[in-house]
Length: 350
Length: 287
Image 1 (cartoon, each protein chain N blue to C red):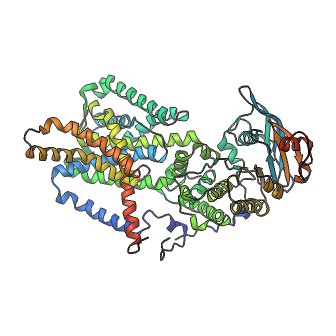
Image 2 (tube, chains in turn red, yellow; image 1 turned 90 degrees about the vertical axis):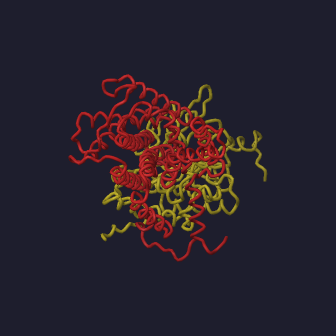
Image 3 (tube, each protein chain N blue to C red; image 1 turned 135 degrees about the vertical axis):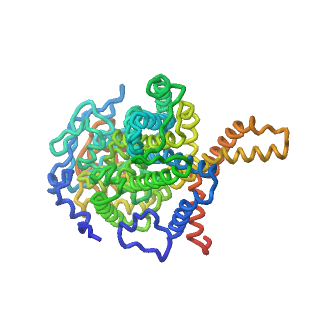
């Protein structure tokens, strides 16, 4: 146990950042977030924005999968519902301020989350995963066929972010919006997890029958988990739609679901800090692979970077998941935990 | 900063109005749990065959019997995991049969499991905290914004959890993930989790199975403390007959889904059927 570290009331005991080293990292992160748009080019900022969108969506999946233990292969469907709700609402009511539209998108997605939760009353594990897969295909089918609303396979345009007449366009305008939503999403999720709802979720994940014997209503809390996860995904889908300005079913393929699962696993199931790292890692990965392919081509002209990139992407993707599952099942957060414990204990070696 | 109201000591809280039936059966000797003619079948197998028994407040009531006698099935019927085909389980005049386990836990029945059923990914503190679930009203939104009354309520309940941790003498382990604890300590945490429900009846399914002597003695001491200090009724299912004979006030013996004997420990071992079930049909107990 650490010495020289005393807490005198329970409120202190429940702080989000109890360790000095964690506060230090937080301070660095705040400074970095402020100066980032000043020092990066547009492309890096674009990737950062995509990362922030992915973080919001991945928090939702982590609440569902990492904290409640309900595997979902249908996360892309929730993103799609959020995105299309934004397209429809903002399309018909362009004067509506964007926070309202995002909230509406989240709320609508939550309601569909209720539907996705119904199979979870009876199914677990693989069977539940299959039912969420079915949910995904049903949703995508409806979106394809509801052409008057969604534009079908042709997709739909979304107007710019509108804030009481002020139009926010481009990477630099989106950055503060995305950052605010990410911070809010992280804080709300963290709070949920240190109170009754989060404890009930974790109890269901670890042993559902025991949770029920402790007074947790399984149906209610599984449903809450699905609706909360869907809410986050809906907000992420809405942000994505606003940011890209155009969505079609191509943006919400099954690969997107798998990407989100990869973020949660690489980051660390059941950790929020890991979710941030995992989302960044998976979003940045294609960029790194592009650079790698370009470098290989310069070394070896016969190497066709443009044709090889999609395959390389899949290769590294699978490799990342497998390697993390084998060597660091706790994900990037596990790496940070070892480092943190080392620094806290320093200079003593045990 | 405004102060939270002082939390009364754990075993003083029973005078408050709680969603359990404390107020009904605080008198020692009063019947607080009664099973009448329970019958439970799985297909062609009759696990329980007209089982009746009752538990009085402030006693340790052991249920013993050979493997497959139906002890755990009985406990699972009481806590709602199984639904008996016939019979009733009465608590405060209310029939529990057909209620879901979470409702039953709110009526004042806390239980532990035969095999460890702790929440492996959570710390000792969090595990016991889950037991406070139905006492906390602040829900999803109050939790998400972590503000005001909901937080104070949560912290008051944490104080109660800390009392239980103190009672079970595991203060030094409060932030340790339960997966890292030894078997005996995990069983103790499980007892704590059941106590957090503020039960009137505690159902313990083999609390000392697989423990070494010291752990067994510790657990026996805690079970006696629960009875003496908290005044709960304890239903104890156990194969460890030495301990059962030492600490229980009444014993029900089961075999093949039937009750074959009931009474004080010293009397029960004289009943011929009980002797037959344990040491053979001749009925000669070794000296």
